[in-house]
Image (tube, rainbow, N blue to C red; front, top):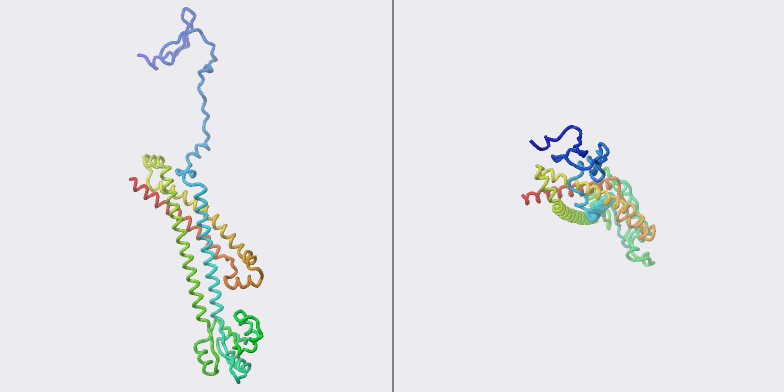
Length: 360
């Protein structure tokens, strides 16, 4: 019987001619002149290349490597696009929030202030009528304060429309009385209006309801516009993530097929993709939100520079508020980041499931 089981186990022997016989590992003896080879070490031309043992850290890194390589799924372009989308969403949400806060402040101020107008009639002492109406209003329940405006104050109110001219002094300018309503126990304005109309001639009460309705209409219109912008940003983000998911599945088709071959489920594969896009959404969303915060922090300075003076800045702040976010506003930006990240994750998951079902 020949083969590996017939190999000699004893030391090499010499034939009668003095030739050293060495066992051949392929089954037969090798004849030839004796070679001086160091015991335990093969000749230099027969040495096998040594393989460095892999470290435990390398094996662990390869074992924990993601199934979806980051370089093959997305690059800087996709991250930049998601960052821009989150930046626009945060700007829109913050602007709508500030506008709602300013509108709420306007409505509170308008609801708590009432104006009484006294017409200037011939043969009537207008100052005496103003004093009588002011005393009557001060005695009514629900009125916190009464402040009659002088002729100079009433003239200054007409200057933006008529300009500064001496002819205003010759005109019969109506006199005004500013009332502040008690917010805890407001007065019944409809009954007070009827009482003033019956007791004093040419006296009317304006509770600014028309202005309140206009402010509510404008605020709701801007809120709907902001909501439409957010919907468009979400739709664009969804389309981008779907396209990135399809390209990722196409570039990693072999990996997905091997995973299916070894028994991986669709849920496992989808989870790997959604984890990747979740990290992408969180990272890009945080960067976009930080840029939006910097814009809101710099907004007062920009408004002051563009306004050209303190008076213009005060007028702008009276219209749009202080142009800065408070703590709930910054919390709203955090919610936008979470929504963007969740949208990236859910979109990638649904896209992976649809692609896998189509292939099956």
